[in-house]
Amino acid sequence: MARIETVEHLRQIIGEPRPAVTHKFNRDLTPQAREFLAHSPLAFFGTIGPEGQPQVSPKGDVAGFMHVEDDGTLLVPERSGNRLVYTLQNILANGHIAITALAPGTGESLRIEGRAELDDDAALRARFAARGRPALLLIRVRAERSYFQCAKSLLRSGIWNPADWPAPLQISFGREIAANRGLPAGDIDNFDAGVRGRYETDL
Image 1 (cartoon, one colour):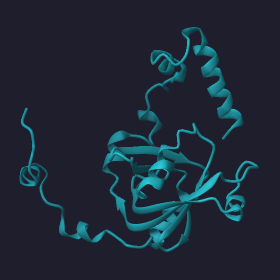
Image 2 (cartoon, rainbow, N blue to C red):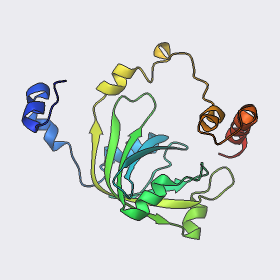
Image 3 (cartoon, rainbow, N blue to C red):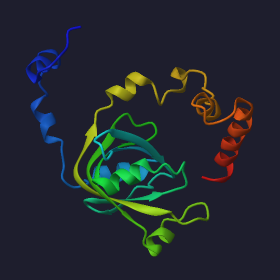
Image 4 (cartoon, helix red, strand yellow):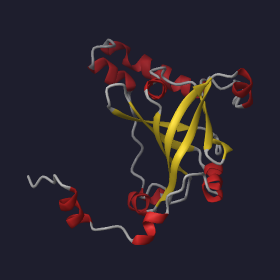
């Protein structure tokens, strides 16, 4: 194994960034970033656990669900999920957050890094109601750096091109849980049916 252990070795392989690229970083959310967020229905939230482990969680809703409160602040409603609350607990532990937002059909992605806090103000929760229910709480993200990622990775993936899509995978949570001895094998189908039902009634 030819293990890379120094930045110098890494740079020999990757090279240096073009000088202009180092000027793409912004402290505030630029008008272009705000427009992108208005079109984004999906983002991946990276946080740091209490013991230093990184964790990434997807969050999705109608386009524009990540509301720009001001030039440097986002408000993100929290909806019903699996209640493991890793992202939320990590925000309470240290507040560090990194977000990658996507917009359908757009190769570029928007990255936001900063600090986050949680807010359960009743008026805010009601303001961000969806599907007849208020938000459970709000994540307030104070951006410290934002920038666009070029389209190369999404272009290579073919993620927005249906002709490149493989056959859909059918994921069984029941099989995963049963394999970890959390569910009898005979209950797998019922468990998975319950998951599919909640997709219909509990978004």
